Length: 150
Image (tube, rainbow, N blue to C red; front, side):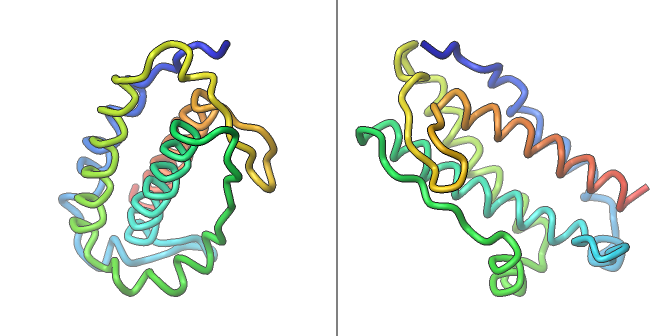
């Protein structure tokens, strides 16, 4: 049985994202380095990823070992990025989705953390493992924004 991951690590991402981006100019937020995404693109990606994680976790919670499809992050950024040029809008979308996910995580019973789905590329993943991936994903991209906006 999987133990509940430390969801408190997910609570601070929104405030960290706001602190990193709120006082920056649109130009600062839209500049990229060495072929990396800009801070604006990273913020939009965080919101997109939260949406995908939301669906995956809900599928695992309500279906028996559902298939969890991957998605092409670069294609999403290329096609959907023009919809997310406003960083404050991306942060708000992320906040709404994260708040909903935190409420869901708080409602889970111990056994539910062990429910699994099978990702087409990554294999079997429990809800606990998905949440651990979310924690790592947050850290990775907050670090990326810190490097982009010294």
